[in-house]
Image 1 (cartoon, rainbow, N blue to C red):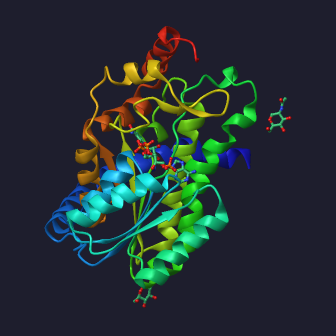
Image 2: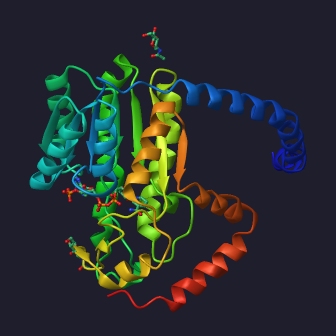
Length: 316
Ligand SMILES: NC(=O)c1ccc[n+]([C@@H]2O[C@H](COP(=O)([O-])OP(=O)(O)OC[C@H]3O[C@@H](n4cnc5c(N)ncnc54)[C@H](OP(=O)(O)O)[C@@H]3O)[C@@H](O)[C@H]2O)c1
Ligand SMILES: *[C@@H]1O[C@H](CO)[C@@H](O)[C@H](O)[C@H]1NC(C)=O
Ligand SMILES: *[C@@H]1O[C@H](CO)[C@@H](O)[C@H](O)[C@H]1NC(C)=O
């Protein structure tokens, strides 16, 4: 048995490298032609039914406006009902024929079942499920006085997407719908003091990459990786080490020293990618350079993150 593995260790990399060299030129042509096709014939969203979680602010709010401009019916979910109503009014002005507001906490499985049912009963169908609700964390792992303070990050960011997806699948299959999920660049890159947040986003990416296989070809999945985008989260609204969501002015100032994308631009790019049926979108695009960097030069990534970590002010 040991011999087999020794042999595979030697032979498999060579065969794989050879296969990649042979396949890659054809794959690139296929990719290009496929992209052109999707670019020229995107989905027409007029009259489609779109459910967005986390629509009360930030990226989710602007996704609502973008889908509204394309003439889609909307179901908007979040906990702050007043904010949702304002978003709904503006979405209606922008062109959505009917907007439904549903107050719900995505980390509660019963509420997720309920809002999927409410939307399908009201509109009679579901075409896009946008799992966008999430909370940010910026905290050195050992600084939390109680490790269970981090549990809600998984509950909202991971389970808060998985629950609605589970209940929406029968309808998405019936109407050949789509799932759009807001992961993050943090899901595949190292972010100083981002251990739990990054893990929750990495879990989403793995989950939806696997689910895509099970649901193909009738349901497609777009995984979104935003970089820094203007929203309440990047204005410092984060889970603290005490396990409460508060605004941290230090983080707010730190993030706003960086090149930050407007929420409008981000939402436009996401809806365009979803209409084309793209599997992935990184927004802004330039964050993609971090992917090969991490694979090819992990030491450099590690050193620079350690440097950033060491000069950051202590977690408040
Ligand atoms: N902004 C960025 O730079 C950035 C980068 C990468 C990824 N992301 C991801 O983008 C998504 C949207 O975030 P954002 O940047 O737009 O921040 P945001 O303005 O804070 O929006 C977060 C949204 O999620 C909702 N939400 C939070 N907890 C919820 C819960 N338990 N149940 C239901 N809704 C909940 C919030 O509504 P309520 O508080 O009213 O419930 C709000 O609508 C998140 O998944 C975030 O991780 C953002
Ligand atoms: C941590 O918090 C949990 C949940 O609130 C509590 O049950 C547990 O006793 C706490 N543990 C410590 C060591 O404080
Ligand atoms: C996809 O949809 C077609 C037509 O509705 C159906 O015949 C087919 O069984 C579906 N495929 C899967 C894998 O569900």
